Length: 102
Image 1 (cartoon, helix red, strand yellow):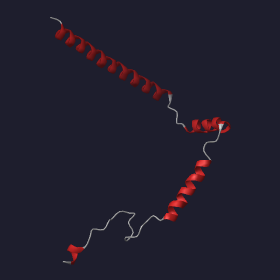
Image 2 (image 1 turned 120 degrees about the vertical axis):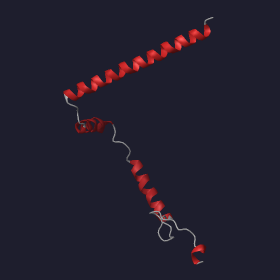
Image 3 (image 1 turned 180 degrees about the vertical axis):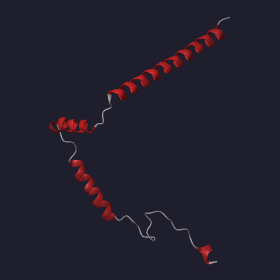
């Protein structure tokens, strides 16, 4: 009988034995930190080019063999898609022509 009167307790990570996990002080503290970060937005025009160079150094460039393979795959895909669109266009034209021509 005692088990019937119990209410189900949440089992999520944020539920701590019924205590609230967020306080007004913690919220205000997080809000203050966020506002401070917003003030230092962007680095300006001077830092743009060095940052671009730094990011370009991180890029893993494909080898010439990989680039050739990727290019051939793209061309093959374009040819297949062109054939599909062309076929759909021809079938639609013939269907409309059949319907509207006496």
